[in-house]
Image (tube, rainbow, N blue to C red; front, side, top):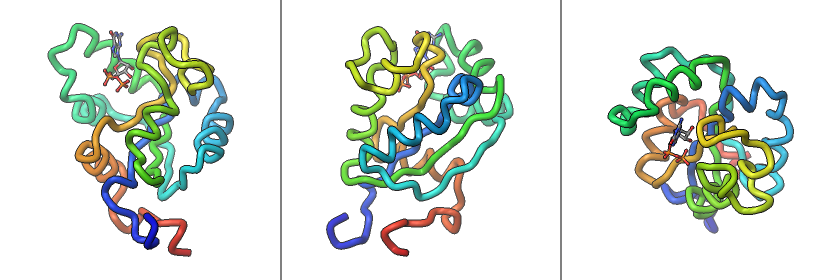
Length: 150
Ligand code: GDP
């Protein structure tokens, strides 16, 4: 990002999941994200349809918790956010902590706010390739606004 031209490695997708919205934690979690140096390229609030949630989590379709995961992700609105920071995927995974909140490191978003392995407040892409796919799942290119370009 040093030349002001973010690369693939500088992008990730966050989703503030339905439990985050329900618990009125949108502001706190976004503050935490911004305080860690991430820039927001795009953000919206949406309610996923079952088909959209199944498409997003297709990789987990054979897992025993898949139906519960889809029910949870469609249980209310969520907030997808396209984020930018150097080495974004790895940095954001560090910030959110382990999938299971009890195992998440102190100070991470999941450790601070999550209730269970399923209701864990926030999604973060797990690779640069998935980040690109997941960002395009929610945001057409023209909606991605690179703050540093302003
Ligand atoms: P993540 O990358 O840390 O979000 O974890 P995964 O990609 O492994 O799983 C995706 C999401 O499925 C998690 O964030 C949880 O919401 C949910 N999940 C993962 N493992 C379990 C599980 O063992 N049980 C249940 N009920 N949900 C799970």
